[in-house]
Picture 1: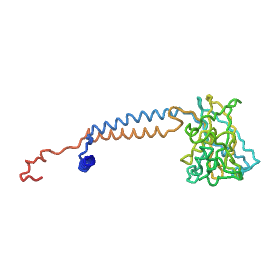
Picture 2: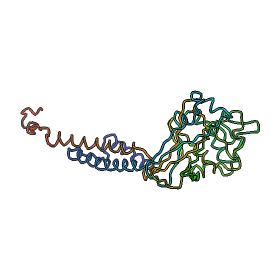
Picture 3: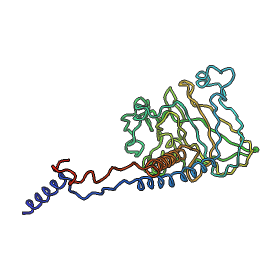
Picture 4: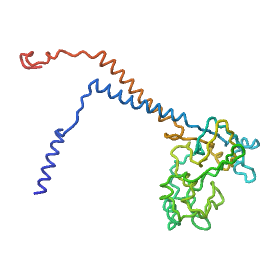
Length: 335
């Protein structure tokens, strides 16, 4: 009986569905409704866009590209030889001028150009099980070619960890060193769930070819936040990653002395390196795309609303005489 009832219900539903008799909302798009809708969207989007652009202008950002600046004159056209040399001093100093007051916290980023972290082979070259638990230390699947060394498995293995960014920055103002905090620069979910507190670096960067920074073997991966930030791969070839925070405000026209240790090899693939100091607002860092997008959509809706008013309200389309369609006008009963 129950099956028969269910079958009847399904049959009735299918019949109503196939005959398009289900309850439905059929709004009538009159000119007044359409114009009101477009004006409402414009009234919401345009103020949001203006607010976003206003907040973006309040962000103070300093950028300094140093891969060329830090190249000695004798190596002006031989960047690869310079970066591979073991006897060349790779320290350089730059001066940055603060254009406006920068309130703390000031975020320090490094930006790389022409670096494809989204390459399929590069993205796959890691093992999440090994990063998460010490019991999976020997798990090196997908880590080729950075899998093992002569002393055993490499922890963390893979190309992503092996190519860890290793340039360093020191900032000072009026001969006072600015402390750069590296605490809580990585995502909390990454620190607590993706990297184990019992997993320690092992045999890392011990081969002949060194890819980037080395890791302290006495600190667990969950506390090595430079590595955690780097391991979250970027989607685009130009990206910036958080290096640290300066918990001190800077005044306008302050001169920041930056001591850069230029170690990372971007010269072999014509890459660029930039150090960035930036403040933030409630909308984040400097990014005009969101404000421009809101303004564009709002302005387009406002333009369409005005167009509808001119076409359908001020100059409505003339209607035919409805009596022409009445039945009694046709003696034979045909249209």
